[in-house]
Amino acid sequence: MRRIYLDYAATTPTHPEVVKAMLPYFTDAFGNPSSIYSYGQEAKGAIDEARDKVASLIGAHNEEIVFTSGGTEADNLALKGAALANENRGNHIITSPIEHHAVLETCQFLEKGKFNITYLPVDEYGMVNPDDVRRAITDKTILVSIMHANNEAGTIEPIAEIGRIAKEAGAYFHTDAVQTVGHIQVDIKELDVDLLSMSAHKLCGPKGVGALYVRKGTKLTPLMHGGEQERRRRASTENVPGIVGFGKAAELARQEMNEEVERVTCLRDKLLQGLLERIDHIRLNGHPVKRLPNNVNISVDFVEGESMLLNLDLEGICASTGSACSSGSLEASHVLLAMGLPHEHAHGSLRFTLGKWTNEEEIERVLETLPGIVARLRAMSPLLKSRK
Amino acid sequence: MKYSEKVMDHFRNPRNVGEMENPDGIGHVGNPVCGDIMELYIKVNDDTITDARFKTFGCGAAIATSSMVTEMVIGKSLSEALKISNQAVVEALGGLPPAKMHCSALAEEALKSAIEDYRSKYKKSRDNEEKG
Image 1 (cartoon, one colour):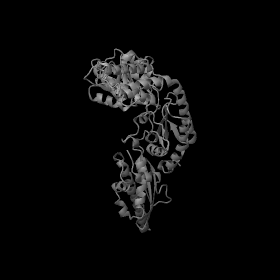
Image 2 (cartoon, rainbow over the protein chains, first blue to last red):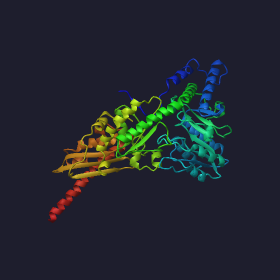
Image 3 (tube, rainbow over the protein chains, first blue to last red):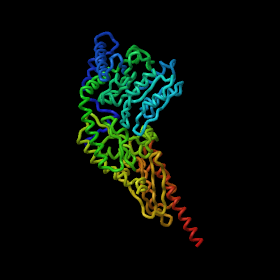
Image 4 (tube, one colour):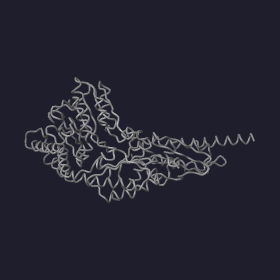
């Protein structure tokens, strides 16, 4: 059975051209970029080139890109780094309850120390209100961190507006842009951000590499000590093949973006419309318009998400859910609950995220398959009977 | 997280699914917060469970344990049925992933609650008979 992968927000297949670009840096060009002989300088040159490509994808200067081991490290570096470097100015950080755990748990860690965290509310679409940011800012606020687009609900936040508010207040502004970089236009000047997290494997690059954009002049304490790499902002011998792969993925994403946004949006709308027509008692989660072009998140009444996922998997379709049962924890998605969804709707959520190799035939397969699965599960649901 | 073949078999082809007309006992357990709700219906004749049906809102493990527990109780006396532990259901399913063990508690609770429901109804009707 040919499998259908619709979980691009979790990770993406590495682009064959990316793999090709990486391969020489495992073998022929294996040098340590810190070495002065030719092997080292070849590797250093490759990193510089990759840095240029990543920087130009977001309209940054190459010196403002710090390569990390991924999005999680970029978030940790942004939050802990900015908090520690600026604690003489204040101890207040503002964020939202729908952030990725890499931000939320880092905030909780800082909260155990001397930092105070404000978690702003979100509306039913998972949208942060910029006025709430304005009201939450105090003279102790050193950092605001709001994600660019939510990985579960797909909602795109008003980052440019929040960026201006933070700037006026003299607070640093960080955005986790892991779900947007390479997928939609991201320009650091437009967004007015000081810090921005990226991850290569979300844009057809390899796993184990990411980056933090650090606006020139931003005070940041490093997490990793022990070397001169990344202008002393991140010690450790560089992951040369990974960084080269990230660079290639950024280059390809930039070239293909406009075309891809259009193509994927079209498929997304076909999927959503098709599901709404074929299955009753389902609803879209997240903002209907201000949303990622590749994200469909629905709640299916009366059924639980993991049981839908298992059935889809038996049909070769890979998707995701906000149900507790699939996460290993006993809590349903913190994002959907923060948006005010009742528990049964959070448990009954299903997320499809499309990407580079998604095609129309695959969308049709989902539309043919899911209604039967839902009908079968509803037939055994005690929730449906009580609605009769 | 991987389910055993037995679990997947019961998940794909659950036994004894559906509602029951005029059940002698109903067990209703779980809640939407944890994402598992189970209803178990039993028919009792001469202190023996002659039929069992279930309806479950929940994950694969919840559906499979529901299905398995109905298979295990049919033909058993009430006192035998009360001895079925969640561990026994898990073993009959060839095990559950550690994160899913709590799902099996649902089946045991539903069974106990259905038997309790039957006994309280039975007691009431017996009391009524005695009064009459």
